[in-house]
Image (tube, rainbow, N blue to C red; front, side, top):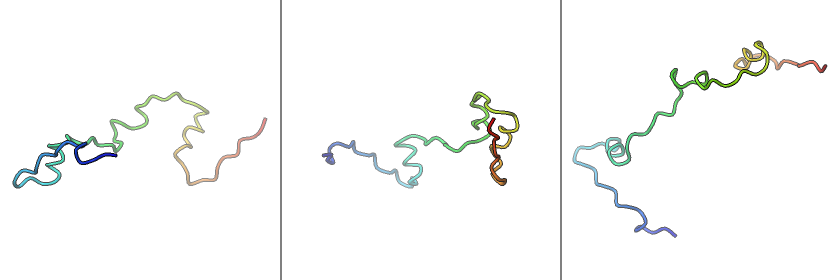
Length: 71
């Protein structure tokens, strides 16, 4: 069971320091996890699978699912 002695003491906030500034000073900056143009799924260079039409339709959810004929 963890007690209070298991955690290091946190430094106090400086006078006039905001909570956000204190968190960055004590724990370091928090990375931005949202995707942006520089880190989108296209930059992953995943192997292409399926036909060109299938790949183009992956992002389009407004239509009925395509029926794939059984050969």
